[in-house]
Amino acid sequence: MVRSLKNPKKAKRKNKQAKKGEGSSDSVPSLPAKVWQPGVDKLEEGEELQCDASAYNSLHAFHIGWPCLSFDVLRDSLGLVRTEFPHSVYCVAGTQAEKSSWNSIGIFKLSNISGKRRDLVPDKTGDENTDMDSDSSDSDEEEEAGSGTPVLQLRKVFHEGCVNRIRAMTQNPHIVASWGDTGHVQVWDISSHINALAESESDLSHGASAVSNQAPLFKFGGHKDEGYAIDWSPCVPGKLVSGDCRNCIHLWEPTSGATWNVSAKSYIGHTASVEDLQWSPTEDTVFASCSVDRNIIIWDTRMDNPLAAAITAHKADVNVISWNKLASCMLASGSDDGTFSIQDLRMVKDGDSVVAHFDYHKHPITSIEWSPHEASTLAVSSSDNQLTIWDLSLERDEEEEAEFKTKMKEQVNAPTDLPPQLLFVHQGQKDLKELHWHSQIPGMVVSTAADGFNILMPSNIENAIPANVA
Image 1 (cartoon, rainbow, N blue to C red):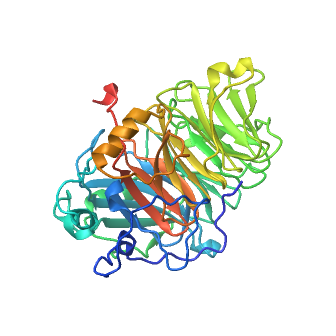
Image 2 (cartoon, helix red, strand yellow; image 1 turned 135 degrees about the horizontal axis):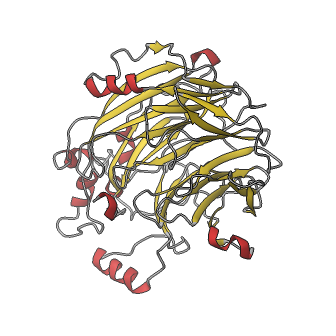
Image 3 (cartoon, one colour; image 1 turned 120 degrees about the vertical axis):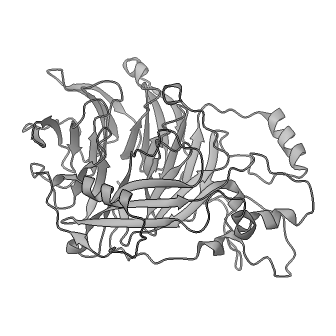
């Protein structure tokens, strides 16, 4: 259930270069690098963590003012599959401001996102000082595609109360639904703001403080409490489900004239707060819900009794779920106890549908999402301030590990007890809340936390381009 950002403080710009080990001029003898495990290793007095820039093809941090508990990446017209730097991304986010009247929906564009494609195995030949030089931002700058810093353009729409969750319609990304802590679900048309961002080349400082008082397209107040669960159907444009903290789920059917018929009768199957909702990627009438009651329910709105299946998924609250769009039988879930699991929905009737279970994280899972480009890859964020990326198709290969160590010409100081499916660990953000893959830029992940946003592209993520978009 861990989800709220209470008593937030407005973010301040930080010099991220300080994390990349700029103090190389000190005459302190260098020691072999070691992988630091959160929750296992402790920092001794005088020790500090350093970001290994060579682990990323791209890494940038930014903020839009107040912290954002939720955001969504907007589909754009810049290309279905983009692999060349510099990149541009469009997002929509909702704030968690100190005062209710200070909240807004932020529509922003981040352009000139630079980066470089690095080798999966670093080149260890040459002078010993080469490694330190290559990790510094100065030496990379000339080789990176794109130059300078990313350009942030921001537009704001007033939102009554904090935004618990925000989602953009898949088919029409200018249509956005927001869940507010006032208990209302609202639908917005942000097309004018997206168009303005597309046409403008100015940065954040131009008009960033102006807040539009735009009215929502539609406002629903039928929920009996606030909520966090909301999802647009990927199969039927405009179809929506929303769930609240009183265990009620409402189905939204689109009508003509930019309005919706919301079911007066709610779907009730959970005995506690509904935390997340996910539509089936292939079936118009099927969606999944998860709850504080530790269960996942599969619903089919065609049936007289729409509760099609119930799964006791975890030993604690089920905070988040993600339905695999490339392998629609797979559903991932993250729990308050730090574990996450993979359910094979074809095996639900047999009574045991869990095909994978991981307890790497020791604090609540706050977000989970399958990659839109690799069926076996997913990203997970946790209250332990880690964002992890996993490839479930991997198994430990001792011969390959030995070959890697030989090629590196040194002892690899990696922990031996890490799951072989763990591809990448990203740290540096405080109070991670939500992450999303970019569906049009393979390997790009965007995350939000109490201290702002990160955009990252790990260097060890190799994505095959799906045949249907090649």
